[in-house]
Every structure is written in structure tokens, then in C-alpha cells.
Length: 253
Image (cartoon, rainbow, N blue to C red; front, side, top):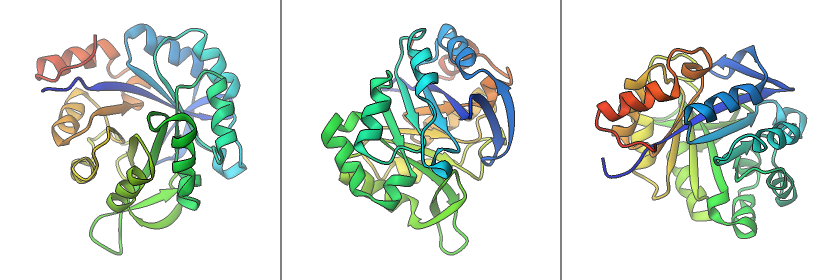
């Protein structure tokens, strides 16, 4: 492999609790998100991804205090998503210590926001979050929003391409169909999106073991977001990285 793959810990938050669901539903409370974030940082995770999963429903992001506490303890990139609807919202979460933002719902409702955030803070700060489900109406995948509850009518691949044209510097691609099942990722989806855009793609949804990450990398993933495999102690960050090295995948130290 010629590129070093990033491992990212995804932390879905509801109120003040780390939660984990299956296909973004049936949420189970797991504890203090800051404690999990600190553990993953100490184990060598490359980045943290915080998502306020009910933010769009209530029209606000509730992660400011959590992010502020996290950046006091960790020194790796932190990306925050959920309920960010304007340049002002992004500025506020960046002022708490986040390095970049992931935007889904607001970008679907008003795509110009992608360009506005990229112009204000740089394209490296603007991550387009795409929640993908296999479409029942056409061959391919449809982009969803409101934490996988609402149809956009957008084809995922075309939406990813448009997002990059508007200024997104990275794509966060989540397979809702595979999310939380820990049975492997949607490799066709990963290959379709990564071959269509020229920016890094963080892929998530379905990681249950190291082999699932290896498969995603071979399908084109630049980074893999892990949740259940870490939260439930199926494998630690060092174990995942060691397994990736043994499979010939370059990872960060």
C-alpha cells in the first residue's frame, strides 16, 4: 500500500451519553464519551469523530462541552457533526477545539453551505457526511439525512461528486444498511464512491474485525471509522493496527 490508512473512532452521542445502535436505531447507552475518547487516544487512534445523533431533530448541536473536555486530554484531530446549519455554528464548534466538521442534513437542504464553510475555514475543514442506503427505486444507493430517517432523493455517488465540486475536502461515507451489524462493510458502495471523487473518503458501517478494515482499504477507503468493534472491546486499537500491518496495510504509528 502506498498510503497510510487512518483509523478513526466514531462516538455517537445522545444528550451526554455515548450510544450505539444498529442501522442507526435501537440505541444502547454505553457511558461517558470522554472516557472512551481518552482510552482510544491512549491506545493510538488516529482521529476522533463525534456525532450528535439527535442534533438535526432538535435543531442544535449539544457537543460543545464534550468537545472542550476532550481536547484538554487528547492531541489528535477531532471532527464533529450533527446539527451544524451555518458558518456561525461551525465557527462555534471550532472555537471549542474541533479541527473539522461533518455536515449532512444542512448540506442536503442547502448545498451552498458546503461552499460557505469551505470558503470560511478551508476545504480541509468541510467534511460532507453521507448516510447511504441501497435504493429500492434504482440501481445504487440513496443519501439519507436526519440520522438515516429521511429520504433525500439524491444518488449517493452523484451527491458525493457534487459535494466535492462545491468544496468538500473529505467525505464521511456511512452504510446505514451495514451500520452496527459488525458483519463487514458495503464494499461495492465504498468502491463506487472512492472511484468517483478525488478527496479522501472515511468509510464506516459494519466493522466487526480487522479483516473488514482490510477489505475496505482494498475497496478504496482512505480511512475507516470504527465504533462497535472498539466500544464492545472486540479488538483494541493496537490489535487492529497490528492486524493491518500483518495484512500489508500501512498505518500510522
